Image (cartoon, rainbow, N blue to C red; front, side):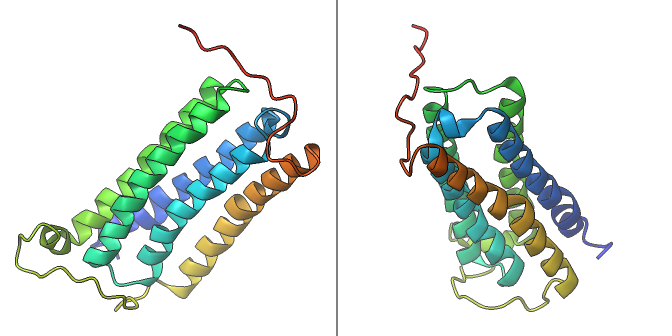
Length: 196
């Protein structure tokens, strides 16, 4: 794998940093007590963003990367960006989003873009094929990887995702629901005035 620096950077650089940023974002939310400001509604938005990035991540881990996987990654990235804007727009109506949390958000936005660009560079002819260029035809088939990633790596990544992403954000959701008697939004949500 030493002759494949982009794969190494994806597996041991971009993905771990991305998981760390996701966990730090949860820490910021917990410190901000979102359960009493924006409530479970914001947590559901966070889970939606997790799903938007989780699907292309699973595709890249398990499937042969082709035009179909690349389209999935690109579309998911733009959906994630739109949802991230919705998330912050909603959050600032009822709570302060600290500079630290904003900085963490910048990592959560740029790392998926970085990952997508690395994957595109590794499968350039399929990317070109999306636009009718290059030597290949666009392949939209669904197939397992010809050369699977090491099983131990996959097990570690999926465990890290469960422990540092899925469980914390589910805890955040349930904490918000519990704090508000099952309601998605706290009854006394403070609405901040926006500067004119």
